[in-house]
Length: 195
Image (cartoon, rainbow, N blue to C red):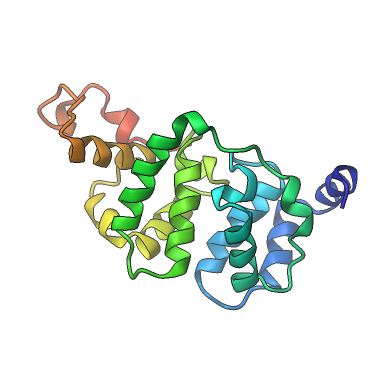
């Protein structure tokens, strides 16, 4: 499909309709609801997800075949920008953190580690960069696929800040000057609402 035809198809199918089209082709895994929101948003140009959702073409096609087997993914090849190679080390650290904290070690969790890592390269709240529709979608994704991390985020810190804090803590880098989060002047930046 040409870029013009893809643009016309996207204009004809708003976000909810893209989501509905994906959901009619799903296999039935509960995670597919979150995946369908993320993919529908990516198709519509919402969020900052790169080419192939950060999975690479082969893994993207495998994910679609596994979870949305009857969805025509061919037109999606032209969506998104390549990942920034300058951030490769940062992405490797995030990916390693996620992979070490998978819930059960499934292939879907590996794919989600790639997707969440790619979403962390954006500049907004992680749920928005991923193209999810609301923050609880991301919290559910984290609980379902990265439960050890989700359990450690017991004070509901913003997810991207939480992930980077985990990396800093693992390296022994303490950038916060306050003795605890509760007395920090920037508390609202880490724990406030994500609107």
